Image 1 (cartoon, rainbow, N blue to C red):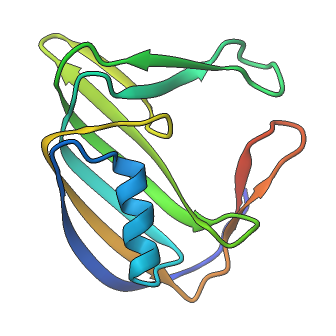
Image 2 (image 1 turned 45 degrees about the vertical axis):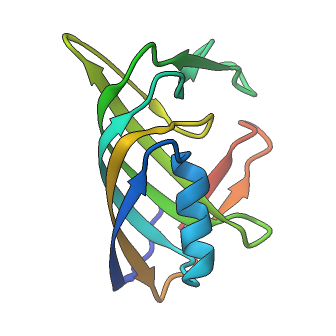
Length: 147
C-alpha cells in the first residue's frame, strides 16, 4: 500500500447538460478553475451510444487490451472518480460508472466517451496540499496513481 494525505479544498456542485461528454467537460472545468486534484461523485443518465471500458481481454496480459461496451439506450448512472495530473501536468479524470436500464447493469471506465442524457449532477471536492500524480507504468501501459 502507498498513500499520502490531502486537505479538502473547494466543493463544486456541477450540472452537466444533454449531449456533453463527461470526461471532456470535467477536465475542461478543472483547468478553468485551476483544480489539480479532486474526488468526484456523479448521478444522472447516460445516453445511447455512450461507451465504457469494461475490462481487459485477458486478466494478466500486459499491456492490457481493453474491452468496450456501448449503451444501447439511455441508462441511469452512478459513478465515482478522481482527478490527478499526469506526467505532463494535465489533469486526468479516472471515473467508473454503473449504468443500469431495467434489470441490466454494466460498470466500467468512462474514458472512451460517456454522453449525458438530459442531465448529470456532479459533486467535485478539490484536494489540496498533495503532490499525487499519474505516471506511466511501463509494465501495464497505464498511467498509475503515485500517491
